[in-house]
Image (cartoon, rainbow, N blue to C red):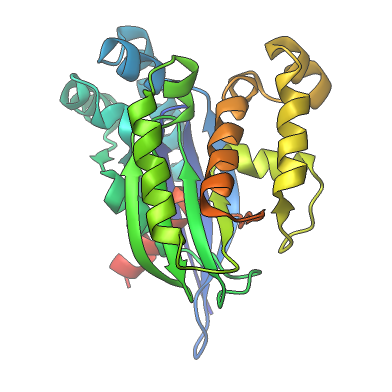
Length: 295
């Protein structure tokens, strides 16, 4: 048996995180991916990028500090290889190359800026259907701070996908036009209307939190009725009340509302009545990509 350790650094619009995973390999079996630790730092790069067009000097400093910390975490964990990917916040920042150079100079960490298509491809490498029946048709939705990826999966295969500039950080800054919502509505309706018994598959920190709040068993779906009920309860509270009464982190308390709106709209437009929530994300996919590239 062989155990190798890999790290995935995910630089999102709402937070940056590092996932350390053990990959356990024994002869004649598929590799087992086991999460060892996850550290998340709430640096909201999207707030800079989407409103003023560049990452602020303050957040560049915070990024450098976070990357230094992540490098130490990787070192003490004896990580074999790492991958660092940045999504829409850095993709749309005018000073992205400056940020990447500064991080490389101060920490040695090399950041890849990936587009929505590549992001969807990496997420697709994960075992989404570990506890879910893959013979159904799903509308897979990954809600981020700056963009949301929509994919139609038929019998486990991705048949069509598209990334839209709709994300939770954009929404709390009122930066999503009716035109964009209409584009998403048309896309979802067009690509789901021929599929019966369709369900949603949700990915991202907000839907994971909602799933946990709803106390749904793993492998079971969250109904549209229950999600709508949760939305109404959360929406009646202000930012501070959500932190106190629902034990939400400060950087989750505001974005959970727009995230829920995206899922509810997608349920409505697709005609689905339930949403499954596999415990996967970009970081999990990055670990798989790393292992495959090095073996």
